[in-house]
Structure formats: C-alpha cells, structure tokens
Image (cartoon, rainbow, N blue to C red; front, side, top):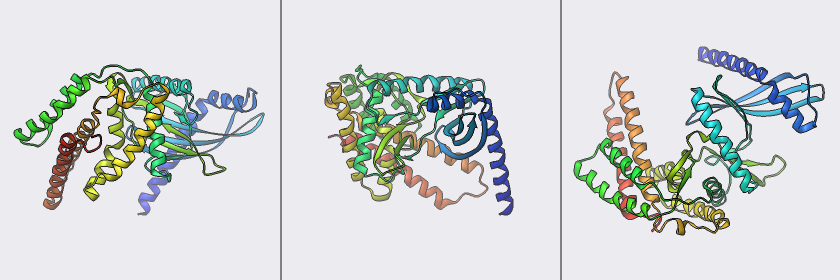
Length: 366
C-alpha cells in the first residue's frame, strides 16, 4: 500500500512540474488576464503556485489548474483548463470547433448558455488552454431534475441553431446495416430490427431537422455553474467540442446521445423508462423554447421524431463497445468465470430487447 502511495505522490510532483513548465511557457496568456482585470499590461509575471484537479472524460484528461501569480500590479489568480491532445491535427480541429461554437452562443446572446472560451491552441505542443469554469456535471449537479433538463435542452437548441436542412437519411441507413452485422443476433432477428428501422429512414427523408450537431453531447460534457455568493444557478456550459459535425446530420442524434446512458441504467435497475421519459419531456420543452425564437418547433422540423431510432443505434454502439472490452478482458485472463460470462450475455440480450422495444413501440415520442 505504501509503495502505491509513494508512486502517487511522485506522479503528482511530476504532473505539477509539467504544468508549471506549460504555464511558464505561456506567460502571454497571464499578461492578457491581468490586462482584462486591470487595463494594464505587465512586463513581469511570476507564477507563485498552482493547484490542480484532474477530470477524466471520454476524450482524455483535462487538468483544471488554479494559478496564483503576481506582476508589478499586484497579486492575481486565474483558472485554466489544460487539455493534452494525442495529435496536432486533433488540436487544430477542436480549436476550430470551439471558436465556431463560442461565436454561435455569443451571437445568440442567451447569457446563461455558454461554452468555455478557448484561450490558446498549440498544435505543435498538442495542447489546448481553455478558461477554467467552476461547477458540476449535469450528471452530478444537485439541481432539480426538471430545471436542469430544461436548461440542457435550451443549450442544445442554441448549439443547433436555426438552419434547417434535409437529413442525410441514407447515411443512417448504411450505418445501421453495418451495425446489425456486428451484433450477436440471429439472421431472423436482424431482419426484424432492420424492418423496424426502415420506417425511420423514410420519416427522416420527410424532415427538415438536418444540420450541424455537437456529436458528443452527453451528461458529463454539460456543466452547471453557480455564483459563489448564492445558490442561484447562473450558467450552463458545454465542453469538449472535439466531435462536432457540420453536415446534414439529424438533431435527434445529439438528443439521443444525451439520454442513452441514463436510459440504459434506469432500464437495467428498474425495467422502467419513466424517469427518462420525464426528463426528456422537460428537455424538449427547453429545446422548443429556443426554437420559438427562430419561429420554429420540433413538430415543424419532424413530422415524426426519429428519436427512438437514434437511441436504439446508440444502445447498439454501447453493446459493441462492451463486447470489445469483454473480449480484451478474456484474452488477458487465465481463468474464465462462467457466472460473469453468463451475466454479461444476459445483459447484452436485455439491451438488445430494449432497443427493439424502442424501435417498435416508440414509447418516448408517440
């Protein structure tokens, strides 16, 4: 145990030194921060201390760093979110997405619907530096479920904006066909799921809900922020715009991504979807509030919302990922636990049944 603790301490020291090096290389960011707060441009920057919290997300680690520093104008404090990327290309792409998203939300000017400002992007060093924000993820936030669902719906509608286009239904049809080939199901069941899905492709062709989507809009990428002085909710942020897509994607793809894990967990634990249905109702209420400002509504965009299709497809993605992880785990295992394997198979079957139920019964939008 003591060896593990010693290793953790060493890792923290190494990380702190690395962050100090990053910060010292980008003193111009701190100079800009001083100018914004004092209207003075300092010549001398002295970083005194850093306090770091690591957050783990789907796209890697983000280091929330509180920086105490001084200049000839006094003591200062700021907060950065430093993200190390795997390639310069990804840095360039995410930076472009982030700037577009910031301008989109700034232009709409809803005040509390935000994304962190990108301070700097350095493709050569594979680093992005965002303004730091205080708050909790949607998943963790101690806010009334109805209220936070409305806010999350408003935020997504603002991201999607007013453009209306036809949905590229053919791309979803092709993706589902490939996905079905990967699933551990019989040919007969594959045919039945394909037939149930085909209705949605025809409906998508009749919709005008196509446009730009966030691509990774889930409950850990939405942050609820409060003012320190009181408990009044001030702002809601979306983070990690790495997977934004500027094409004729279906808006419901983002909505489904936001709810799929909540739906899976509720169904696994209770064999019910009532809580998800309620949260979705208020989410769509918030979404339509913003659409009204564009003289639109979801009913106008979609004669029939293809939400259940996108939820089923996301469930299938989840199944495929679980199977992949399970195979990797079995490869590295010397002894197979039959009970664990049986439980895993039962869980996969249950998820496939949930997806079929969604496709055939449309319990959330009918």
